Length: 400
Image (tube, rainbow, N blue to C red):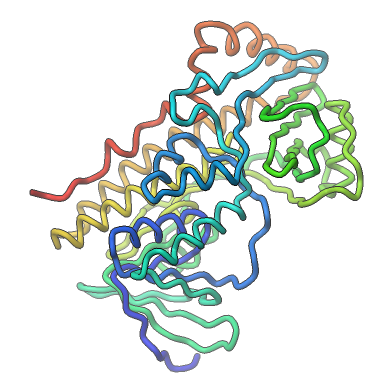
């Protein structure tokens, strides 16, 4: 290893410029906190990936004047129609959600990240360094130092800050270096998904198909595109497999050769044993992972960042001990994670039952219970994450 050089000083170093890391850097920049944001990738991210931004997250984005730009760049999902093998079982009406966001926003993750990156230029206290991989950490009583490798030339540098936040994803290098274990498991199902030109007649509508042969979910995207997600029934997860599953379950024909983006995934549920160690804090997927079905994971990460930014503001204002505030962050965010992960798990379990009898039971539950009054009044708020604990209620306020 080359000798470290060119120290990079900051109040806070944020490792990882995914959606959560970028949001946290914006919040810290708005507060005038000297922030160094490190990202090992130098190429553009995939254009889609996660797509759902919930009303509570839009409320948080209002604080950095980004809610309106996100809404202009996205697509408002105003309803979700649920089908079984033969007919529509009912509809969730998101227009009943409270103002100012009576919808779920669909926006490709890449577009969301682009807007967050562009907003960083408004904050002179934030420096963004791409091609910088955090490979090690050491701490003392007053600071934390990150060992950084330049992925282009292989040189090593060090960055020192009062605090370091790991937003480097579910395979977090910093979490591994700290020796923080995770608990959890991989779910015994897999999914294949892709984005296509939208040739349906379903503007602003999601459509969910639950049949004995499997499930397909379909969501509108901006610029006349649509996301299709299918339960994989074989090891084959290519575009042809997705097209076949969509046609077999929904009857809708996707055109080969028109797919704009493709991926597959096997959901996991994992939770870090600790959310902080001394002056290093885990945030977003570095701290917890849940099934992406239902769009809970990224939004839970946004709330993590909001809470943690408030903690940092208080610490730099009061200079009080950090450990009690980090411990409160861990307690509150673990609670929110468990609620969201349980919801995501239940929704995935319900949607992945196959076979004639389980499918018939599911259809009866959806038609006669979930989509009937009084539950039908509450389900839109439930799926929009409006029934989770409000992150504003747990924000630590500066001492007076």
